[in-house]
Length: 201
Figure (cartoon, rainbow, N blue to C red):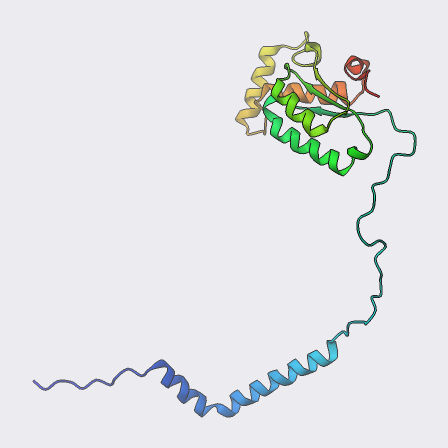
């Protein structure tokens, strides 16, 4: 049986070359228009750089920090933290000290609902710096936890319900104690907090 002769497949580059040869005038016209457009755009929208700077900087180099020459406010930096949060506490303290408080020397008060570990006090005290006024205080039990008039079983059921509904931190008892402390004793500046902060001026 005689074999059927098949037409060999054409090479892609050969096909592209034939297309270019048959449409070279069109391709040349498009390329010319693109070059003209680029030239016109550059000529019309080019902004020459001025030889002298138009807006000189207010100050060149690093300025000395502004010193505290006025009467200082009676204030402290207060941080509520846990012993396990020592890494984040050190990072925050260093940032505040380097950007501001190294020049003004406001005291620090660190509050915890448990006794501070020596590791926390050592690392955070080092971040504050030598000679700084630092206090590590424990929040009194009456400021942290459930008031006497709270139904704890009902409170725990409510927290479990918030957890089931996907409310962030809703099921954490310590989070609710923190919110009560922050929004009550701290935010309202009640006299109850005075024993902790009274020595800080």
